[in-house]
Length: 155
Length: 391
Image (cartoon, rainbow over all chains, first blue to last red; front, side, top):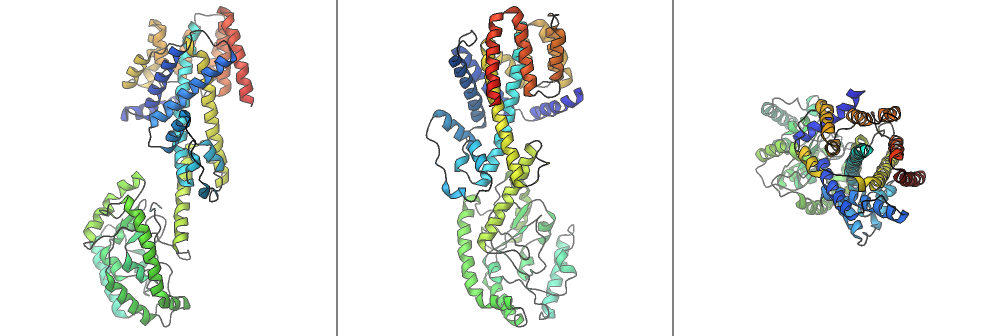
């Protein structure tokens, strides 16, 4: 059981040794910095009201997505669209010409940020990259949560 | 496969066989020998060996216009296509052996081949099929069409290639592979180079530019889909594009929901959290310690201080190490040890949502002993989580 769960870890570590600037590392450092900034803003007590909880939730989620997008940089369409969306600018106009040539991709382009203005080929490309980043982000958040829960049990 | 832009091609397998003069045949055979000497390591050209009948391709005009791309893996060399200048300028063997890439071997032909070919055509064309005759009649018109297409595509290709190598490939991996053929191409062609990429149609396929473009697009899409299939777990079993897309959409959505959920949990825990970021980043810089060493490491750190534990736990090590950590942590609190152990055992393999929820419950349960106020907050929060999850 342990060997099973350690195998991917090994490969991950080896890849990290080979390439010091992995996406996951960038993501983790950015996300932690963002969380640190958030921590200063927040009161030390646990959230009192529902509105406060919601605000915090939104802040953490925004930190997560923003760190994802900024770690990837502007070379990907989805990260650009994500940052644009978060800054609250206008959404990109839907390109009507592409819509009729698409087969089942309508749902996908709603999900992937910036997918409205893409043709199907680049949409699939962006989706692949987006999935990678999401997986890395989820892993990082889980690890933070684990460590925090293990430390908070002592407190 | 990798060749991006549609182009013209040799099409149809024209069936003129009887009319070829022996001189032409012999000339080509001698050239074949020459070529084999040049490229020893390549297998003999498959279509030429047993082929006593020479068939000229229908489109000589396009050959005169531009170069030729062998689209390596997907397409076999078309037995119907044969041309003198074809082999003079390009190293055919490299094209056929390098299956993985689309190598573009520029071949630039000046006008004369077209004229000569046309004359041969007219000689051979009498007994050929109707298609052929029609083609001979329309050759001028088609050449015009092709010129139009070629101009159109040259505009596109100019963005990509700076005419040093005529190969324009979008993917970087293909670029790597292309170095060899492009070097070959430099040797092979001393004539001015052109910027076209060719896609070859198999026999029976449509050859007008629209359907070629569509075919290339479809190939690209299916390539991406294969890549996505590797990324998304459980996507291998699904057949059909629609099912795969559904699976992909589900996966992306579930990941997004996970981010939501985790951020919710982090927001609940955040205030009590001490991020030892410096420590964490330092460790990220030196990840040299092998994973087998991790548990001892964490034990040591746990013994020294709590903050160190948070730092080490942030590393990319989950699973068994976490379990041991949890056990050591739960050691002082003897009352809930069994409960904690069960939860940590659940976490060993892969942490699903339910496990995380249970973990949170256990945490809350523990805190219920020490600070009832906080536990109430968390239970309320958990209920909110449940509601959100079921939605």
